[in-house]
Amino acid sequence: MESIAAGAAVGLIECAVCQPFDMVKTRHHLSSQARSVASSLQAIHAEGGFRRFYRGVGPEFAGMVPKSAAMYSSYDGARQLLLAHTSLDEVAASVAAGAASGPFEAAVVQPFQVVKVRMQTKEYVGRYAGSLDCAARETRDAEHRSQARRHPPLVASCHAAHTQHSRARPSQGCDHISRPPRPSEPSCRPRC
Image 1: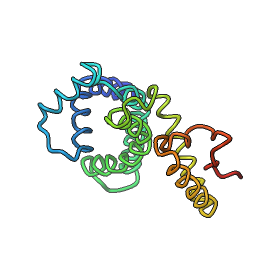
Image 2: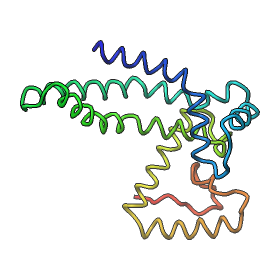
Image 3: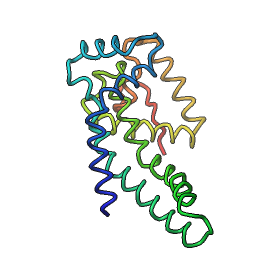
Image 4: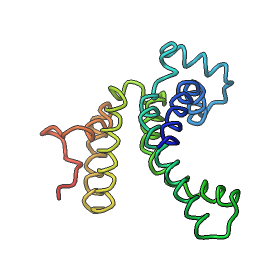
């Protein structure tokens, strides 16, 4: 339990210190233009001042405790199991346990990272009311994509109706997918 608490505390400090650099990194990954770090820092500051550097930090903070719990508990469990049931020495068991704990950590942290990156991306500024709204919409969209895999013919016909509707009203885009359709719009949600 101490290692989980210590890991969470260190993770929160890491988030607070590294978030501005993570914001620049995310913007560089998503940008098609070559920019220097200094020009990226200036552009982000121009968008919203110092607070803009911490956009998306909420999901990072929220994910730190479960991430640490998954990483340290799976590492400790795997290490003890390897030392008890194999002939590996301390170093080899620690390396193997570290490798084994990675997938558990990744599975826990991935949903938080999706929300964080959405909140950091310039194209999504103003789309979400906050991190919770982003998480709710992403969950709803993931459910829709899951239904698309289960009901491909129905979703294909809905997509065709949506495409036809989008051509008729190009300014509306795909916003109506994240809200109930109006009576004049075709429904793009499969009915089960």
